[in-house]
Image (tube, rainbow, N blue to C red; front, side, top):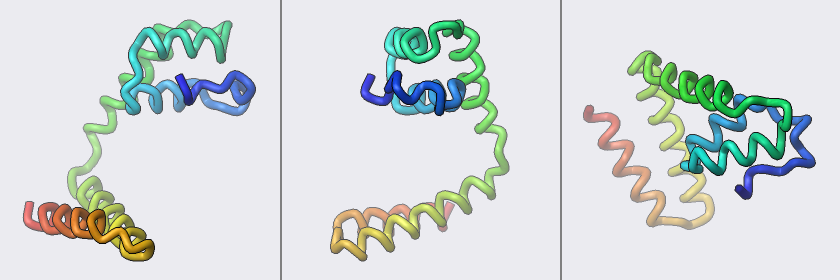
Length: 103
């Protein structure tokens, strides 16, 4: 996996990295292989289970908080897209802002 860099293993929180790999869509086999390379003493199954539980816990967040975050992030995407002249992305961000504000 391109995100697995053994030279940086001591600087990376294993749980955070496994969550990142899962969210990025890496396969379980690839994740297990990377865990073995990066943290040879770690057991992959408990790390993967903890990561999945952390991802599941995110679904318990306050819905208003999530909508507020999405609105703020989408506004930032719109701002940056306009800054670089990416009008297509800016229009998509506006469309998403409209959808988020009418839900």
